Length: 476
Ligand code: SF4
Image 1 (tube, rainbow, N blue to C red):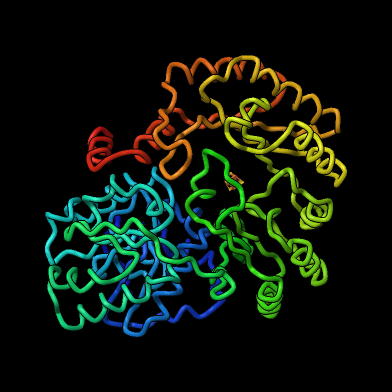
Image 2: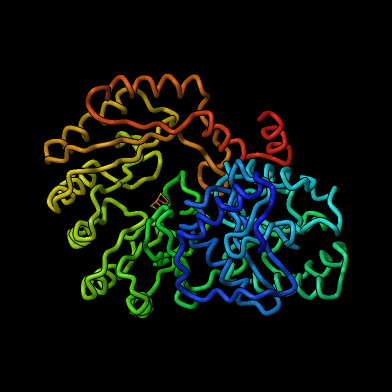
C-alpha cells in the first residue's frame, strides 16, 4: 500500500503502522490478494481486540477459505480512513464489513464507523454498491434487536460451526456479480444466520463443537495486547456454573474443555516458535476437569502462564504457586455479593468460608496483592449487607495481604439469564448505595466503581429494541 499524501491520512496511516510493528505473526494466516475482501472489524480498541481469541479465530477461519481475504480493523475515535492492520489497505476497498461484537457498549462505535465512512446506518438505505454489513460475536447469543436495522446479516454461535459455508456463499455470489437481493436469497438456506431483509430470524443456534476439534490459539503476539506478549490458548468455552447475572454461564453451554493431549501439542509448537509464556483463556480455569494435568505440562516445560479468570472456591495451591512463579503480582477473585444473602440471591454459590479459604491460599503462595469484584444494586440489599465487606477486608489484612483493591459494578440484568425482565435499579438508589460503600471503606482500602452512566447505557442496549441504539446514538 502506497503511503498517503494528505497529512491527516498519513498520521492515521502511521498510527496503524506503529501498532502493526508491535505484532509478531506466529502462524501463516494465509493472506492472499483474493477477489472477495472482508474487513473484519473489532469495534473497540486494538489492545482489547488483539487479545480476543474469538475475533482472531474468525480471522484465521475466513483466511483459510480459497478466494477470500480477510484483514483486521479496530475502532479508533480519531480515525477517518481506517487502514488495515495487515496490509494498510483502506477499508473502502473491502466488499464486506464484518463486525465481531463482544460488548453492548461497542454498538455506538459501529454506528460511528459507518457514519465516518458515509455508509447509511440502516440496511434498507444501502444498495449493492455499499459493502455488505455482517455481525457476529457474543452479543448475537442473546439480544440483537438494537442492531437489527443496521446489519444485513447476523451470524450466531461459534464461527467453527457454519461461518465457512456463509462466507463461501457470499464469495460465489460476488464472483457471479449477483446483486444484494439475490445474494441474500442465496444465504437464506444457511444455518445460524439471521437476515433482517428477509425477516429471517434464527433464534436457535446449531450444535456447539468440541474445542479439541478446532483449538483456538492466537496467531499474533503484541506487547500492546491486554495479555501482553503471551500466546493465548483457549482451554475452555462455556461455564459449568449458573450465576444468575452471567450471560456466558447461560448462553454458551454446554461447557467444553481443551484436552491435555491437545494442550501439550500446542505448547510444543509454541516452544518451537521460541514462546515460553502463554495466556489461558476460559470462563474459569479452575473448573477445567483436568486442570492439574495442564499445570503439570506447563511446569514440565518451565513455561510461564496467566489465566483469564478463576473461581475462588476451586483454587489450588499448585495453580497459585504456578502463577507466582510466572511473575504474577496480584490475584483477582470475584466474590460478587457483599454478604451471604446477596451471594445467594445472585446464585453465586460461594460461602464466606470459601472466600476466607481462598484468601488463605493466596497468602500462603506469597501474594500480597488481591483484587476483588463485587456487584451492588440488588433488590432487597441494605446497609448491613455492605457492612459484611469490612469482615472480608479485615480477614484479608490479617493474612498479610496489604495491596487490596475492591471493584464495584452495578447489577445489569441481561436477557438469556434468570434475571431477564428484571429492572436495573434507578440511578438515584445506585448513587446512594455507592456513596454509602465509599464512606464505609474510606481510608481502609482502594475502591473503584464502574461508571453508572455507562452501566445504564449497557442495560438499555442489552435489553433494547430496534429504536434503542438510534435514540442513544442521536443523543451523543
Ligand atoms: S463462574 Fe463466572 S463465567 Fe461462570 S457463570 Fe459464574 S460468573 Fe459466569
